[in-house]
Image 1 (cartoon, rainbow, N blue to C red):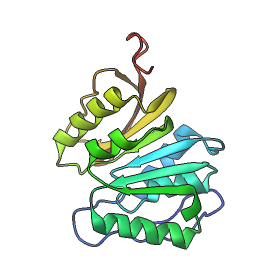
Image 2: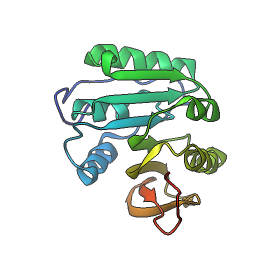
Image 3: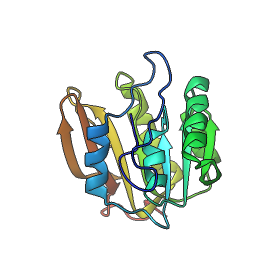
Image 4: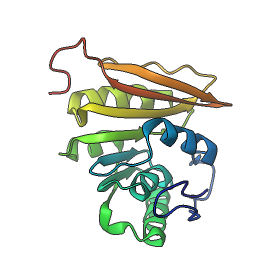
Length: 188
């Protein structure tokens, strides 16, 4: 697992031990960032269910001003901190060890990008995350929500969001979503 591009390109990252965390494959990450663009100057991103933090660190390497990292796992958070230190990016990161609902309630930031990568088998977390993102309105009106999920289990896009693009990479699929413009006042 490595940083694909930007000023930290090629830096190898560590992943938490055990089977609880499934790092995003380099080829998937590279494709996602090719779709989103190469530079992320003046943006703020959220790496939700961050695991090793590789997706958020990719945003930072490509120029993001600040990235928030959220995971409930103590091991994952320790790994994120080590990776941020190794990449010398800790001063541009906010790391939160917290459950999804608690973390999203605490955030008073509007994000340009939210990368959401819950454990594939926890379908309930996808539904809950969509609901909480909608209720807390932390994605900017023109922001993008990137959702990673198991290709074998179709993603149900949460109310208030629309799918802009979908790509499949073997057993991993990516859905890039935005606010549903047909709903009034959704993104406040």
